[in-house]
Amino acid sequence: MPGPKDLDPSSSPRALLGAELRHAREKAGLSQEELGQRLFVSGSFIGQLEAGTRRMQPEHARMLDEALGAQGFFQRNCRAVAKSKYVEHFAEAAEAEAQAIAIREYAPLLIPGLLQTPAYARAVNRAYDPTVPEATIDEWVEGRMERIRLLDHPTKPLLWMVLDEAALRRQTGGREVMAEALHHIAGLARRNRVIVQVMPFSAGAHSGMQGALKLMEFEDAPPLVYYEGVRTGRLEDDPATVAQLKFTFDLLAASALSPEKSLALVEALAQDYPHEEHP
Image (cartoon, rainbow, N blue to C red; front, side, top):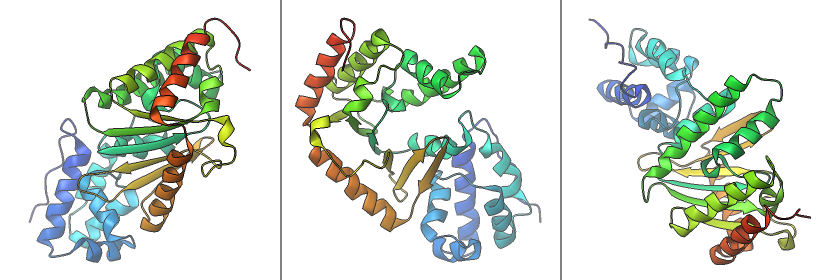
């Protein structure tokens, strides 16, 4: 009996691959938990694959073909899904981000990608790789701007950002670039497109001092958390870990300035940047 046809890569391969996985699992009479046991993963992980919020890895594809008798279908199409314009450690998080209904993020050192301007993104990427060709920087900046298009919708996803004061005062790209970047953030906040809070230096020690984190919620899949370091990142779906880091974010929001005071600070810094140095 012939297996399913390969997916058309022009029509959202991950979504189609997830739908095919759900169809094959149900046809085999397996629950998500039962299929997860055969792959040595959780049932929620299978649900995330089906919803398209997690990327199918080659080893998972091989085991799915065996468990579901798919005759190599998932291995063949897994390769199409694996193609990404993002760096490897961030690719899966970026793809999940595009499907999230709510994103909560703490940024300790730089303005997060979804709030960046092209000039700020260019300065950040150039600092990451000082010797790469300008054309490569152009590609990276373009990829980041494509991510930001998810904010074109007037209300979805819910975006809640806690920015450390250090991220606002570090002159990334120079004073004019920073002024533009902060005016952009203030504009998003004034249009009620993003909730912005600032963690001031005066707050002292707080729950997020060990690094950045991003919490993502989905309509039909369990929540995920992404945290990263220098040239590395990790996407985590363990419920206990997600709950712990949600508590961390709640503490951050409670310790930060109110949205009103945060907006006032962001706008004041944006006005000051073209005229004077910041201590």
